[in-house]
Image (cartoon, rainbow, N blue to C red; front, side):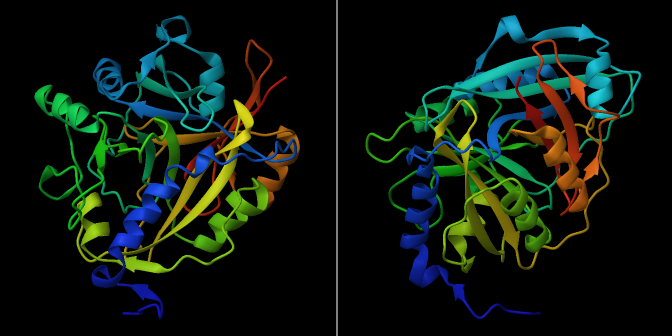
Length: 343
């Protein structure tokens, strides 16, 4: 098996690594100049099996349901066109939590569909290609953990359902799964650090293809140093694995609600977890998409397709407020990405 020459071991680097993870979760608070020609992080969408159960989970974490913008069961031709699939009913919950960067609401759309066959991806591991997570800083994190456990909806990824990573005596960080196996990284803020949504993560297959798309096209900013390969109990314990070797590319994007600040977007590259990519479609249970606001949808779409992205939507759709949207699969491993252009 190939071993990278630069490989941080648990025994020598865990303190620095733990600090780096916590700092990376709060980098979004660093001001950034507004960039009108760069994509910005706007929303996340998650496809669920039972909307009521999913809403309960996210509310337990502190998300708030926007009742006015949520929808009951109905056929929706716009969504059918966007998803490239016909003949289903759908219902929607618009969930919001403030961004830790801007203090403004960040939206996670939970959508359930019925009337078509759906695969269930809830059992996949965190290192499976296209796996995703949302990162949130939670105040009173132990109380949230206890409440989730008492409600019977705590699905911890970590070894022994522990909130603290292996070998750590301070600082709380853990991954938990929603009812559909979609992950949320919960982090205890440092000092008086802001609470709320901090970052997002995506497990990639080919880092060069991923960088071409998320950095070269969408404009994500990378630190100047190439990340090192990491391994050890700290990294294994939080995701519930053993023997993983991983490197983390911490991109930053402007936040669509306030482009003067940034949110983090992690490209997660496992050296020894290059598993086959499961077949799945946008309507399957446990599918996630990331929504990027772009300044010129037609141009970004053409450039994305030239890089090898695949268009999912039958055509670009226009919403009632004039927003134009199109759904794609990225050129790396087919993760779902929504492009949206505001009027």
